[in-house]
Amino acid sequence: MIIDNLEFSAFSSVWFWLLMVAQWGVILLRPMGIPVDLFRDGQAADFDTMIALQVRRHTSDWPIWAIAAMWCGVTTLIMVAGLYQLEIAFAGLFLVLPWLWTQFMARRAARHLDATGCENPGKVLGRLNFWNQILGLIVFFLASFVGIFFVTPFIG
Image 1 (tube, one colour):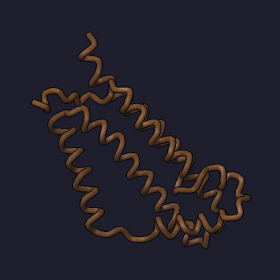
Image 2 (cartoon, rainbow, N blue to C red; image 1 turned 30 degrees about the vertical axis):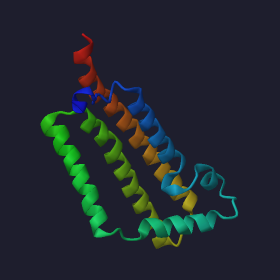
Image 3 (tube, one colour; image 1 turned 120 degrees about the horizontal axis):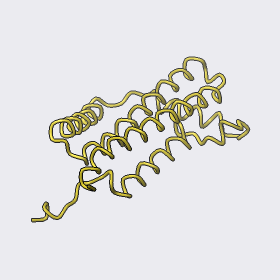
């Protein structure tokens, strides 16, 4: 069968770690969709326009079907990881849940910027980037720890 030839090990795969590094590279280099260089310098001509567009994008409401589909997928991953102890489900959780949390933090920062009239966006985006970095450190540590749990029984 085709299913018998598929390998579901994730934590021992270099592709999982490359995907995780690429995902966090994008999250950390573009918090809320704005490049880090722009809000550190704040001298770009279209910086205010970019801030306004991203604030509008992050403060708009999502359709209920999109939220339901997203949480259905997350719940399925949690159940498969918890009940069946599948490594690929744990790896999926380490990719999806932190991304959702960073989106929640970006949405919160956008609502703050919208409420204050985009006053001092560099400080807000810098704080968002700092907390994204902290979350990234925690996620990489936990993924390594869980990966050791899955990989070490096969080494010995």
